Image (cartoon, rainbow, N blue to C red):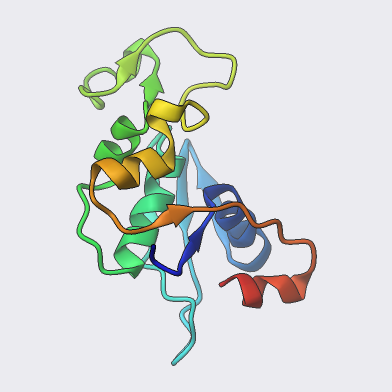
Length: 142
């Protein structure tokens, strides 16, 4: 397995903690400080509605120079479920009622898990959970 440890939830926490996050009508512009010679080299991605996980994974794949199909296709592969009014924007998504977890991806289900996505697409990465409890842990995590 690739040594990079991935956890979408903690990457989001890191972004909120360490980077600027701007919200505007279901769009989040994810900005990252790029340190010269440093390790924080994520390319900016504008999140489309309900594609938070897809955009985070796209940034991770781009950082690792792994070609990908973009956040919408990534999210659809992760079980993206959206309301009826988004059916034209997301033709490959599941259209339905709002689930208990809310609209978006269904990565909590094994068939739509991030590791299953990596395996199906022959991506040599693995999702792991690492909880960041202190500011100094961020540098160690990255």
